[in-house]
Length: 101
Image 1: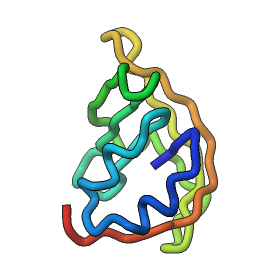
Image 2 (image 1 turned 180 degrees about the vertical axis):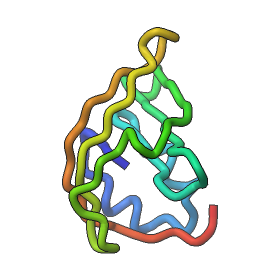
Image 3 (image 1 turned 90 degrees about the horizontal axis):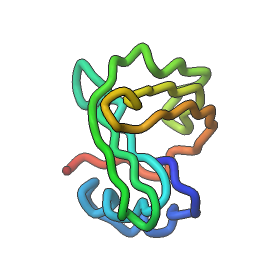
C-alpha cells in the first residue's frame, strides 16, 4: 500500500487484506505475490477516481525485499487506455503480513 497518509495503525487493526483495500483514498495498492503478474489498484480524489489492472513483474525493480521492508521503483503506464501512469520510487516498512484475503 502506497498511501498519501499514514494508515499503518488501521492496517495493523485489520484481520484480512480485504479490510485494508478500502483504506487507501489517495494512493496505490500493489499485490506483489498474487501470481505471475502484479495486481494494482490506484485510488485518487477520495476514491472518486479509481483504476485497477495487472502488470508484468518486470515493472518493479526491487532494491530491498527482505520481509521487513520493500524498496525499489515501480513503473506502470496505462495512459493509452485511459488509465494510470505511475513512476514511483519507495522504501517502505512491512507493517503486517496477511494470510487471509
